[in-house]
Image (cartoon, rainbow, N blue to C red; front, side, top):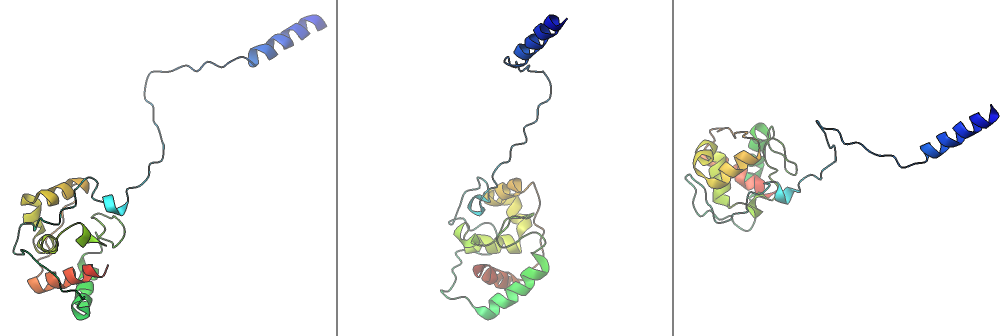
Length: 160
């Protein structure tokens, strides 16, 4: 009896040390690997940087003075805090793109046209259409800003 038990134990030991064959099963497989988040430079995720496009609207060839107008920027910050922060943060993607460094990606006229008339821009401007697609078709609502309010928000964006 001891011999039979010893042989069975030895056989079990040898069988357990053997190579394990992995069977592939048909059906659903899920891979939960972590992917790196996009950097803010590629926040537009394939939407090209375009500083020559002025967009569609009343602003054309806008240039800013070398220094920021602090009073105008303060007014712009108040307006931005009231209506923009629900969708835009300075350095973080939310519903819309992060706005820090926006003038490194878009012309001042394009930004101001997007602020004052996003509905028209989303219908006619290729960059605005691409951003709409990138941000899951989250439409920027027209806040019906005046030209003065638009200019103030644009000035504030220079400080981000």
